[in-house]
Length: 108
Image 1 (cartoon, rainbow, N blue to C red):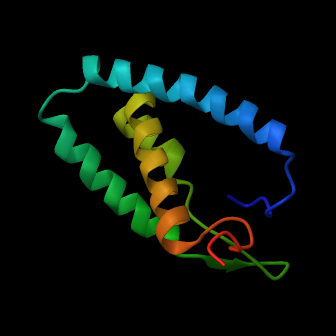
Image 2: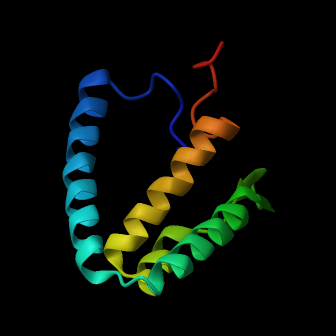
């Protein structure tokens, strides 16, 4: 999300999305096996909480900003499969609804 638009070649993007599809398919399959009905509300609540926490930027030295890294915390709390799914949901919402990532020329 912090890479400007046009920085990566299309072939690199395609290869990385294909690799991500493999991990997503594996994560959804394993999450269905290991998640119980009681854990799904916890996953939804933590996803919403870390979405909100990651939207806040904090100024740091050098004139740039930083934000919370929710992915590792979600993976530790929920497990790697649910953590990957939650982080993907967060990044999709940030990119599609808030225009985070790149230089935001996609919709213009």
